[in-house]
Length: 546
Image (cartoon, rainbow, N blue to C red):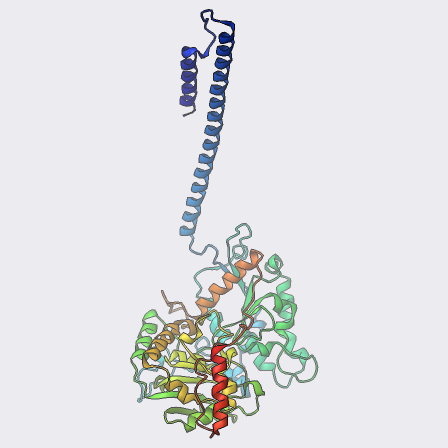
């Protein structure tokens, strides 16, 4: 192509000379005319040369750009080919081979223990799922053969660890888990420390040094590893299968609750997956409580969704739980919810006792049967903001009713809709319930039937994201993502953003609770004077027009 351009330039010069642009002799003319003609010929020559120069310049520039584009396209093609050849690119996870004192030794022989720790230990069979549920003559669906187990709500450490053993993009090369030469990698390092189990065995009757021992030893072990030095642990994550409050002791003397895992430097650097965030730091990320259902295949999930979708719901609402008269005032709502359920004409109640050894509310079949018969499941806070029952209700296709923003909306942003909360749930301010200013039954009856159907369908869609699939190697979900899949993807995304220098946050509280859509509902439990009713209606009108 370069030769053709040069030939074109030579021809252009030849034509110019033939037309008088050269130095051929002219006939004698008047002096003025001759000078003007010579000047014109010189200007023409300069113009032609200028055009030639610009043509060469532009040609060279476009040649370079074209070559660069070809190189970029070639690199892009190679990158796409590499990505297609390696589907784990940017998804590799390296699992630390921890000394057994940090996991296996904690649960070895623990079934001989008593009390709270003994209850957890007794359920740590079948990779943490617990005992398979026996077939119930009243319901042939919820059985061990169908993936139902007596899973303890604090068994997540073991369940998650076993699920990570199934992860498709594990690597034995810790360097591959960081890939420092690739800016788009999002790989991470998993730390299989059984933090929740370690808490459970020491949270009563031990001094602080004993309760912190495993966490301190783990920090020292990790910080001596080369994987830690790459990002000072900010690409590491672990699972502590209890609420974040259990790992953030408020004082360092006496018998105060919990240990200091999340307050230690190592705990502050790692991403820690907990059942409930404390909102005090940006590194504890809430994930769902374990439920009783652990499907082995996509077909198991789809079959259960069809079951709850078609079930006949004879109760308007339902509640499962025990009173909580001794909790702090801002979440002291449950007793009032129980009272309203008892007084309502269509509320199924499974009341529980808090006495040691009580088996009430620990029969998965009874809980799931009740929730499947109800359109709405009441979920007030308990000992803390969150509760396992909220996920049991979602699993049953029962629309959850929340009374505090931190029970779900300010938690679980990875697994529940982050914005349109009222598409799958109902929100009634707990303050109104506690002050007896609202009738829960009246609120729920005011929701149109077609809206209830839409909300239930949204709940059913959420089921896969809040359950933990069977973690044993003989089974695996193929196209459906469970709670572990969602959490791992979010961890990888978080680490990728950290590597890019972005500030990440586990989810500080959203600035305000959802709107109270049903504020106009009056209480059925207090007789109000005419003045009180007028004041209430005026207040509601002001709130509705501000």
